Length: 206
Image: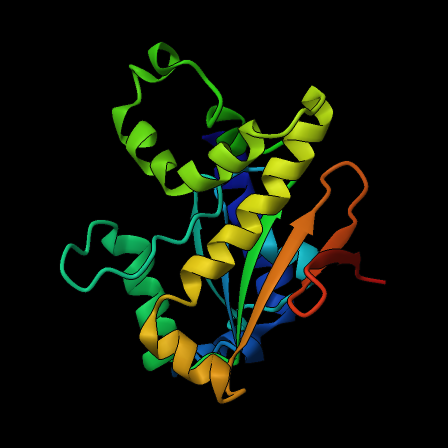
């Protein structure tokens, strides 16, 4: 707890004091340009990766950077879905980024024995959002390293597909009023790969 309290003091003395005008403007309201959908992994911090200032990113993070497909009847996963709805229909963001990463525990958990998930039944249910990814990967003959890499990237592509099942997202995307973006972040190198929707492959951002 002391570490967190010391961090607050340093924030107030340094970062906040240097950006007082920014925070003063933010107190009047927010107008983020991007909805960032990422993994809850503590090693992946969107504002550090993008160097975004406060007020630029509207963020939702969950296990495995998942996007529940649109379901107007069940509304089973309301948290992430409601954030997408608010970002697009109220905040009118210009971009939606789905960012996955290397060494993802959520993607690894897809292949755990069911007994290993007994203590986390809610996590187990959540991971069913990537069942199609798991099935496609299991059909391939891969080394453990290849399986990890391909699962993480295929999961990003699947979540982009799920994102476009939201009618209000698809409408704006088709009208070129909204960019839908997939990123793959490598923790150990800092590299970020962008998914090319036309060519169907990840390309290094440089």
